[in-house]
Amino acid sequence: MREVVQKEIIKWLDAIIIYAISDSKWVSPVQFVPKKGGITVITNKDNELIPTRIVTGWRVCMDYQKLNKATRKGHFPLPFIDQMLDRLAGKPYYCFLDGYSGYNQIFIAPEDQEKTTFT
Image 1 (spheres, rainbow, N blue to C red):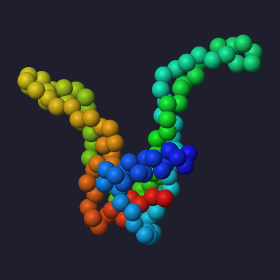
Image 2: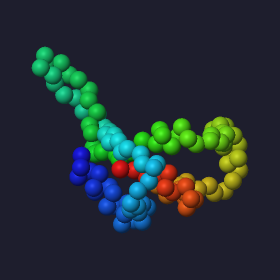
Image 3: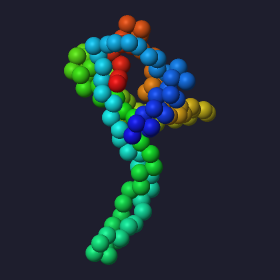
Image 4: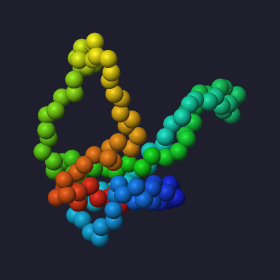
């Protein structure tokens, strides 16, 4: 696990997505979640075939429960799919944004960045 975290942290540091700080009262713990790939079938000790998900790697996630409890909630409802399709109807072009690591690319105001620290 340690190697997974180090590799991901180094990648984020190199991309200047994160930076090191010395101390914060908002430190959140890191969780590891398996990335699941396709499904394979394995045989158990009773010769039964069991479909099993393949773990293809690990995803590093921060547990922001403490921050969520202290945050005032805003109400920004997402549109329904039929509303989105109505807006796109008859348009010659539309764009799709790739969400890979998208959460880490959201701008956070400098005075609030301390609240997203993790260890």
